Image 1 (cartoon, rainbow, N blue to C red):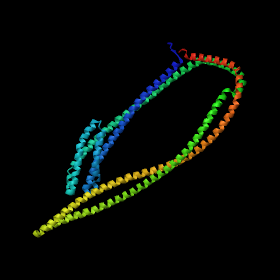
Image 2: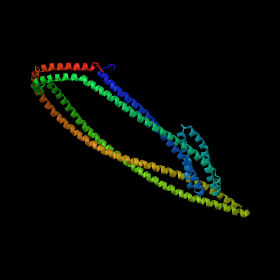
Image 3: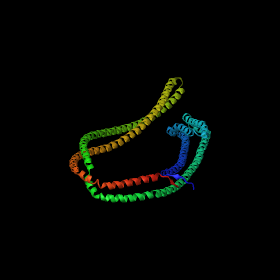
Image 4: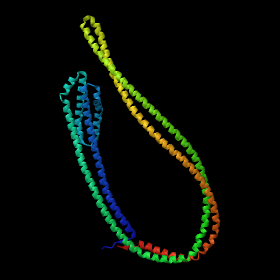
Amino acid sequence: MNEIHWTLGKKLVGSFAVAAITVFIVATFGYRSTANLIENNRLVDHSHEVRQALARLSDDLINAETGQRGYVITGQDSFLEPYNTALLDVEKSFVLVRNLTADNQAQQRRLDQVRPLMDAKLAELALPIDLRRAQGLEAAQKFISMGQGKRTMDQLRRILADMDQEELDLLARRNADAEASAGAAKTAIILGSILGIVFIAVLGSFISVSLTRQIGKAVGHIQSSSMELQAAANQQTTGVREQSTSMAEISTTTSELLAASRQIAETARRVAQLSGETSQAAGLGDQTVQKANESVAAIRRQTDLIVAHMLDLAKKSQQIGGILEIVNELSEQTNILSINASIEAAGAGETGRRFAVVAEEIRKLAERVGASTKEIRNLVEEVRAAVNTTIMATEGGAKAAEVGTKQFEALTTSFHSIVLSVARSAEGAREIELSTKQQTLAVEQMNTAMSGVAQATRETEASSAQTLQTSKELSQLSHMLARLVRTEVRV
C-alpha cells in the first residue's frame, strides 16, 4: 500500500469535499430530472387547454345552429339568443385555438381548413333566418332540407376531431416522458444517496480512528497536569474564599455601575415622558379611526341606495319593453288595414283613388313606426344590459364596503387595545424610574464597602505563584497538542 502523508486538517477537508461532491452530483441529476418533469407537466397542461378550446369552439358552432333552428321553427326572436351569443364567441374561440397551437404546424394547417368552413357555416346559418323573416317557414325549411349546412358541419366536426386526437396523442407521449423522467430521478437519487452514505461512513470511521490515536497521548498529559493544578488550587482555597467576597476589581466595576445606574435613571425619566406623549398621540389616532369607520359605513349605505335605484330602473326598462310590444302589434295591424284599404280603393275605381293615396301614406307610416319600435327595443335591451352590469358592479362595491367596515371595526378594537397598552407602558416606565433611583443609592453604599477588599486580594498573591507555574506547564502541553495536530501522520 502506498504511503500518503495527510495532516488532520487535510483529512477533514477531504472528507467534506467527497461528501459535497456526492451531494452535488445527486442534486444535479435530481434538478435535471425535476426540470424535465416540470416542463413535461407544463406541456400536458397546454394540451388540456387546447382540447378545452377545441371543445368550446365546437360548442359555439352547435349553439349557433341550435338557435337558428329554434327561430326557424317558432319564428320567435327569443330563440335567437344562443345564435347571437355564438356569433360573438365563435371568433374568440377560434383565435384562442390558433394562439394555443402556434407551435404545432399540423394543427395550424387544420385550422386553415377550418376557417373557410366555419365562415361558410355561419353564412349558411344566417340565410334560413332571413328567409324565415321574409318568406315564412316553408322557404326556410326548403333551404335547410338541401343539406348543405349538414355537410359543412360534418366536415368541421371531422377536422376538429382530428385536432383533438392529435392532442390526445401528444398527451400520451408526454405522460410516457413524465414517467421516464420520474424513474430516472428516483434511480439517480437512490444510487447517489447510497454511494454518498457509503463514502461518508468509510471516511468518518477512518477519521475517528486517526483522531483517537493522535489525541489520546496528549489527553493523558493534560490529565496529569490537571491533577497537579488541582493540588495547587487546594492550597489557594482559603485565599480565594476571601478574594471571592472582596476583590479590588469590583471597586472599579462598582464605580462604573454607579455611573451606569445614574444614566439609566435619567433614561427611564425620558422614557416615561415619551410614553405619556405616545399615549396622547394614540388617543388622537383612536378618534381618527372612529371617524374613518363612520365614513366607511356612510359609503356602504350610499352603495345600498344606488343598488335599489338601479333595480327600479331595470323594472322600468322591462315595462318599456312591454309597451313597445303593444306599439309593434298596433303598427302591424295598421299596416294590414292600409293594405286592405288600398285593395278596396282600387275596386272603387276613380272615386277611390284619393282614398288609396291616403291608405298608402298610412301604410308607410306604419312601417316607419315598426322600424322605430325595433330600434327602441334594441336601445331598451342595451339599457337593460348596462343596468345589470352596473348592479353587479355596485353589489361588488357593497360587498367590498362591508369587508372594509369589518376591517375598520377590527382596526378600531386593535387601536383601543394599543391605547391601553401605551398607558400601561407609561405607568411601568414611571415605576422603573423610581426603582432605578433606589438602585443607584444601593450601588453607592456597595462602592464604599468595596474599598476594604484590596488588602485580602494582595494576601492571595503568594499562594498564586505555584498555580502560575502549573498553568505554564499546562500551556506548554497545549502547545505540544497543537503541534501534534499539525504534524503529518502516515495513513
